Length: 433
Image 1 (cartoon, rainbow, N blue to C red):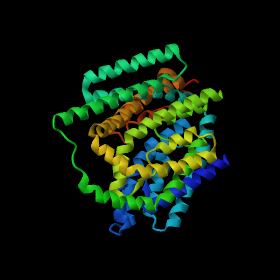
Image 2: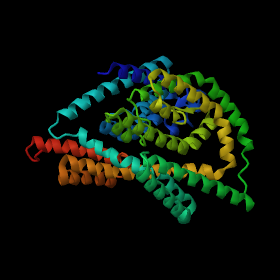
Image 3: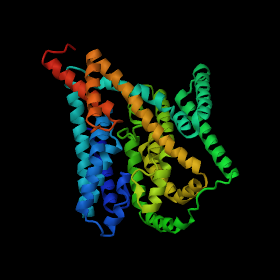
Image 4: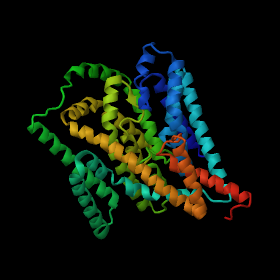
C-alpha cells in the first residue's frame, strides 16, 4: 500500500469533514441552504444529516464508486460527499474530523483490494476499461459548439463549428500541438464573442441588466463570514492540490478518464502534454461552474469544498508536492478575494452568465455521450459481442428502472457489471476467454 496516499487522503478527508461540521464549506451544493440553519440552531444535526445522506448516497455509489473502479483514481464524489454527511451529522468537530479520516483510510484500503481482485480474474477488466478514456477528450472538446448552438441558434453554431473544424485540421496537419486544446480555445472565443455581441445588442435595444444593488449588503455580510474561515479553506485547498499532484485524485468527470490514460504514458514529455491538455479542459469546466459557485458562496457564506475547481489545475501542473501545496492555498485565497468582483461582472454581462449555464449543460451531455461510446469499446474488448449484449442489457435496465444510477455514471456501472458477469460465466464454463 502507498503510505503517502493513505496519509494524504486521510488528512484531506479529515479536514473536509471538519470544515463541513463548521459550516465553512461543503461539496454538495444542495446542502448549502440548510447549513446556515444548522449553524444557527434552527435545525437539528440528525435531521440535516438525514437530508445530506439522501442527497448524496446516489451520487456516491453511482458516479463516485463507478468512476473510481473503472479508472483506479479517486474522485471528489467518492471522497467528499460522505465527509459532507459525517460533518453535518456529527456534533463534535473533532469526532467529525476523526470520522472523515477513517472514511479516507477505508477508501484507500478498499481500492487496493479491489484492484487486486480485478487483476486476479480470468477475464481482464483493468486494461479494457482504459478504452473508456479514448473518446472523452475528443468529444468534450466540442462543448463550446454545443453551448453556442443552445444559446445563440444554428447560424452562430454553424460559424463556431466551421471555426473549430478548420482549427483542428490546421493543427493536426501542420503542428504537434494537441488539437482538442486548440479547438476548445477557438470554440470558447467564439462563444465569448457571441455573448458580448448579444449584450451589446440588448443594450442598444433598451434591454438593461437587472439591478442587483439591493442584495449587495447581504453579499458583504456573507463575504465577512467567508474571510473568517479562509485559513481552513486555504489548508483544504493545499491538501487537495497535494493529493491531485501525487496522482491519486482526479478533479472531475471531465478529467478522470483522460488523466488515468495520461498516467499510463511512459514518456515524460508525452505525459506532461497529456496532463496539460486535461488541465485546460478542467479550466474551462471551472469557468462553466464559476457563476453557480460564486453566487451560492455570497448568498450563504459557505464556500465550495473545491473552490472554483482551479485548485485541481494547480495540482495537475505543479512540479512537486510542496509547490502544489503552496499554490493550492494561494489559489483558494485569490478566489475568495475575487468573489465580489466576479459577481459584479456577472451582473453586468448576463449573456456570459447564461453562457456558463450552457457550458455546464453541454459538458454533461457530451460526457454522457463519450462514456457511452467508451463503454461500448471497453466491453467489446472484454467479451466481443457477448460483452456488448450484456452492456446493453444493464444500460437499458437502468433506463427502464428510472435511472437509479445517474445517466452520466451508467456506462461505467454497466461496464463493470459486464466484466463481472463475463468472469462469472468464464468460471462456470459458459464463456471462453
